[in-house]
Image (cartoon, rainbow, N blue to C red; front, side):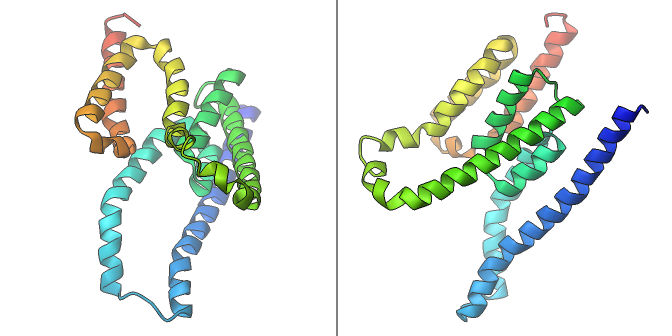
Amino acid sequence: MNDKQKFFNDFNESLHRLGRFTLILGTLMLVAVPFVIGMINDTMPSLAGFLKGFMNVGAIYIPVAIVEFLVYAPMLGVGGSYLSFITGNVTNMKIPCVMNSKDIAGTESGTPEHEIISTISVAVSSIVTTVVIIIGVILMVPLQPILQSEALIPAFNNVVPALFGALGLKYFMKSPKIAVIPLLLMTLLCIFVPSMISQTSVLLLPAGALALLIGYVLFKKGKI
């Protein structure tokens, strides 16, 4: 093992230690908030009610969280994953930022260069997001008539689809043979089953698996 690889491994180990600590601490603090508020206001829910509510929500979000981790972690890298999962806005902010930075820098996933670029891009995205939120909170009252304008409501409802449509097109064009079938099937599914539109994280797993399968078949046939 050369010095570069040793330094990179040590760097990742330090990220894992710091990341696990901050994630555990952040999770405990988030979970503690409703309990602390309940204790202060003497409105604590019963344990049975809490468990029932947790199971209803967990049945949906636990599988989604597992799928998102398996799909996003390889793209985000070690440092980027810990930063993204603790600061949020993973799908609509961090992933586009990392993928765009990867293309600009010309790095490959799994390399030390990509780990550094990913961590920096997520950190910058988090800082910018925080600054924008602070400015938004300060200007919320003066801008409220504009933000609630009927003319802008359709635009706000389509910001995320527009963002991912523009970002995804570039990758679809790179490998149209792989992308066309999953894209067509997922589009048809959302058209005929509109309720699936809000379950995009769940759809990532079958769409990704299908794309991998198509890529493998095309590779075996020597077409890619």
